[in-house]
Amino acid sequence: MKAIVISEAGGPEKLQYTDVPTPQVKPGWSLVQVKGFGINHSEIFTRKGLSPDVQFPRILGIECVGIITQTTDDARLPVGQKVISIMGEMGRQFDGSYAEYVLLPNEQIYPVTSNLDWATLATLPETYYTAYGSLLNLRIQSGNKVLVRGGTSGVGTAFVNLVKAKDPQIHIAGTTRSYDKKQLLIQSGYDEVILDQDGKLQSTEEFDRVLELIGPATIQDTFQHVHEGGIVCSTGQLGNQWYLEHFDPIMDIAANGYLTSFYSGNVNQQKIDDLLRYVEQYDVQVKPEKIYSLSEVPEAHRYLASHNSLGKVIVLNR
Image (cartoon, rainbow, N blue to C red; front, side, top):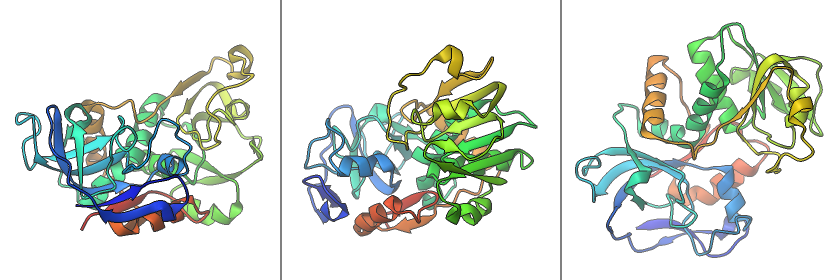
């Protein structure tokens, strides 16, 4: 089969399009023909050698959509079944989805029933799933004023799409480090754009709900912009800081407020089914920003890491 293999850490040029043996089925694992997958910042992080538990050579890729071609669970995962897979140790401890086929543990494969096309399905797993889980935890109500800190990210734009499809009247502001993207953010569905400079919002506004995608690096400043009783969901770590330091929950959390979190490792069949149902019920217009082929994965990495990206970048095996 064709696959993208990385043998040593480095730039996008280290991602080599080559022939490798198709994985052989083993007990408890099934073979998936990969129809598509998203490119994620965590994979760029790993490509650079910044994931110490990942050993090379490796086929990266932490998500995919596809079809079961060989199975060890005929009842739940029959041959021909459409499936989604997210996270686990896919693309980290074992080879992932940057390939024509991927061998996955059965407990990490989720069967889906959907008439959505492959481009739409490939846009959902990591990005929209993360946005949807965060949406549930934020418990947004009619009339809430919402902020997405990290508004230009794929999860941020997916979140806006999900919220606006259900309730177009919800006011959502998005942050950016450069006003050069202001018009693109407005076109993506944001009602307002706020400049974020050196970890400080250039605004005195306050919000009822905040999707925090920069993460621990900005949470303290975020809470300076939260109404009493507001909720902050810390989902991303785009600020490259993994832990809260010098954080006093009593003083730093807004009065009577809440700090919650979500990440895509918090995954189960019910949430995936609910996401698909939500997309179909509210006619969410799920569209990737760019679509690449498998051989173009290095270029997809370059684009996602650039200042030009806005939204979800996917790869389709045609």
